[in-house]
Amino acid sequence: MADSPNNSDRSLGDKLLGFFIKEEPSAASNVPAAQPAPRNGPSAPPAPSASGMAAGPATGSPVGSVDTKFVDHFAGVLSKANLQGPDYFEFREILRNLSNLGLPEEKQFQAAWASFKAMASTGDPGILATAANQYLAALSTDRDAFLKSVDAAMKERVGGLQEEQKKLQADNEAITKQLAELQQRAAANADRLTKISGEVQEQSAKISQNRANFEATYATFTDQIKTDISKIATYLK
Image (tube, rainbow, N blue to C red):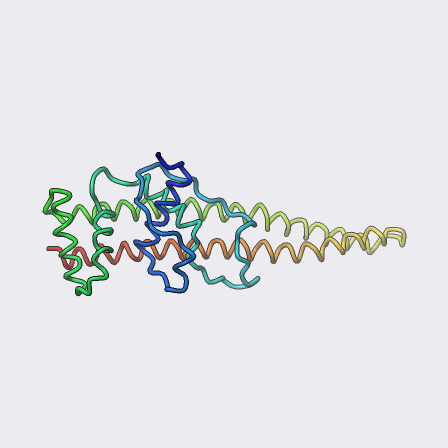
């Protein structure tokens, strides 16, 4: 029976997690076992949201970490960009299977290339770099779209609260000049200002943490692919 779209993205996400991220033994039980990667369409970019975000410091740039929801998202992005037939991902899977044999890195790459050549019926290692660069381009395009959505979320949520804050502060300055019967209105506005300050910090921290998690996950994927491209050029001549 074919997997549902969500299950397919989860399976590909599990496999990509195993391809690019070496887990600590203590964390292994938190990540489902890798399964065969389907060739399906992309998932929609996850919009920045308050729910599911880890709150970071209110000031400064939060430190990102690999986020499983972004792993699933990148699985969809890379699935859409996937080339027909064996390519970089099949080569990386072979390479991963050789990683526990104790071979030197160069020998691992050469052995993986020997297996891949038989699978792909080609002797040109350049096809690996071509495919890997296509995936890098797809991830970069997706990152640009995500950062735009982050900016929009900041403007809509935090910017709106800050604008309300400014208006209420100006209103309070006018209220203080009015008659005593307006004091109740001033007190109500002051209470709202106190709440807005907390909301500004909370929303800023959540959105910034989500962005940092995205960047950390993106860097993990792209750094590994770039490293492989360099090693393919060095070892597979």
